[in-house]
Image (cartoon, rainbow, N blue to C red; front, top):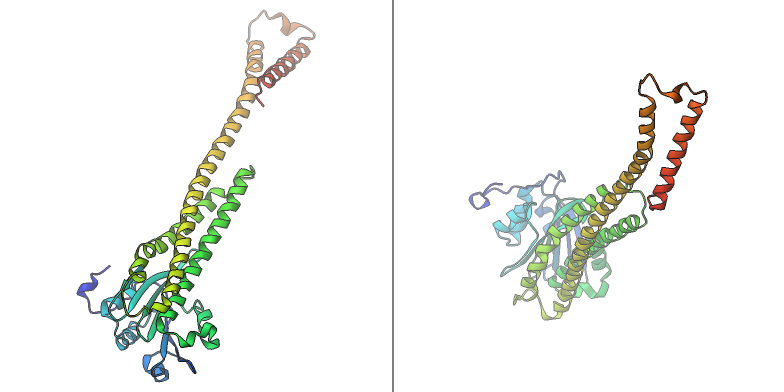
Length: 339
């Protein structure tokens, strides 16, 4: 990674090939305008004066387009670099003229970099891929759910953050459900095939979720307790609700961590028990055959004088002795509760 403080160039650090598209939604109490394009000049004519502007940027291929968008809304160059740097951890920053959230949308084992910038009359969202992640919010604006169009940009900001928390809750719940299924399988003494691989897969998903959420847990208080004029008193309860959801996700992550640790211990313990059982069975077989091997070894010696070898019923007698000794050994092991 290059030192971004020594560069005037914008560089997208991800690997998505999604072409950059802009989706504008500008609204006030009475009207909603929507338009899509590939350059800012194609959509900015639809911005309603005095209204709230929500501009979605999908795809980071065209860094110059993203530079134009951020410059138009007064976003600092360093912030633009952070938005395009998908390797950064999640973070929340409070500035004089805007608030910034960098996070990840998680779908299975895949993560999509997301940046949200909230200003006094606008919200910008940046997403690596063309996605429908925030379409529910768009429909709510069109239908004016909960009079969303009469509210300021901070309310839209809180709704988008809540959408992220909903995604994290769904991921944490899915991981928890699958961990419970694995726990039931282990406790039911079922087959252990692929159980270890499944536990490791869930551990990777858990670590992805933790890496995404944990920095937000530590930094959300910056936003929640800031004295910025961008968050109005009337919308503080909505941000508190987002915080409640964030804490719920954190609690679920802690639960998943404990469950994963217990599952791994249980899996190792079950493997040890099964290995002990196998060794026990092998020991039983070996114990039964030790005296039989001794008898066969004695009768297999090439001494000239061994009366039983020339006895007419010697072969039958040998088999009777072998069977009797084997059965007696087995019964002895059963009385010792070796099964």
